[in-house]
Image (cartoon, rainbow, N blue to C red; front, side, top):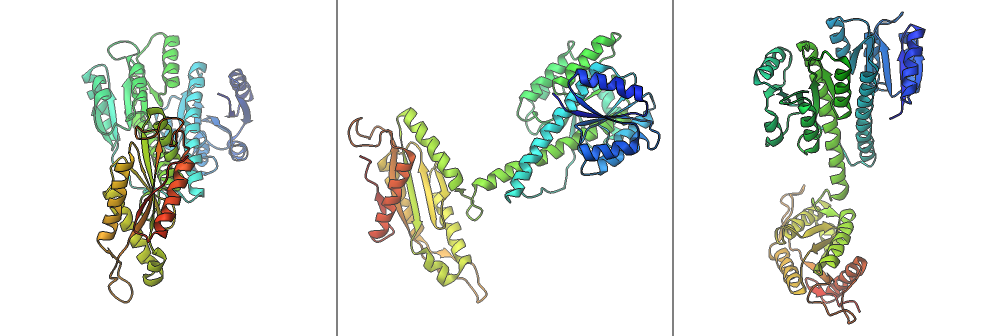
Length: 477
């Protein structure tokens, strides 16, 4: 993974040493010796990450971080504060200012590179979601979600129940979200919504079990997007500890904590992870909402042509593979223009919405109903033969005609009602058992365009024959 890292340190030697380390991992670098220069470079060059020294000649690293996070141009750039200080209060202030991590000098290169990879991966994922969301908004397909947030859930998973209980007691005064203790098996088999954040010991029953549990959680749908923070075991072997930490980050850990973690600092880290999770969820929701809007007719709630045509293509492909037939109906409201001209467009909208409801209520759950034009609908029936489809089409004619549609009230009083009928063109596609054998007249290999075109022709014939009728298309020769 390559990118550009801004190194901010008032000591030139420190900047050079860090630049060499970054170059060995194929990162490009920018350098700044004070806070003011760092802010200007960050805004003009938009680096992928910032390594920020705590002590600078003009501004503190915390103040630089605060200004970076307050500026929309630089707010999404990951910031790692690097310092010789071991002061817990300074660490907490840095996290409150928006720092993504806080590393003490001398910085262990293995941990630094793994942390950079983790932060850049998370940033790229969020940038991709923002890009999709922005595209949806550009086409008017998404709206901002509600800002209201409910209480989150943080799961605590340790090797011993006593340890998890101690974690909960320590964190409870600093966390407003729900803290629940889970056993590893329960985390994988629990039903219902998954916790937003998991705090997992790296070693459970055996060494490394926590990392394996994290991988399992990442592979399951409900917990795939949860944030996982790993609590590292106390280790005398520094090299082994670094390897475990780097492996945890590369496997998807959002953060690392020492075994003797500071409760207040950990609460800040967990809260930050929870907020990132919620932000990503909101972006995913708006993207999904935009996709739904892109394929859904807003008046009737039915699918639109953009969705229906690819669906027909997949249905045809499946029919060819299984040797079954399918039915396509094209329906058109009779004399719909007269409804709009006489009662107004609000009445016309009410008629369309009611007809859509009647169509849905009188077809199988597996059948597709779509609005493909102003007053034109399409019905696609998988695994349907001619007799079944004809009976369904005639039923639709009857239920649409059976009861007038109640119209909305207008400025002059009650809206009244209007009778509505539909004409239907029906065509059969696929290679079902009722089709003639290969070589004879039939539908074998008939493309979707042909099936749909014959249904359109049959609809015109139904209109010409007096409307409120079902006409079956002749098979392709």
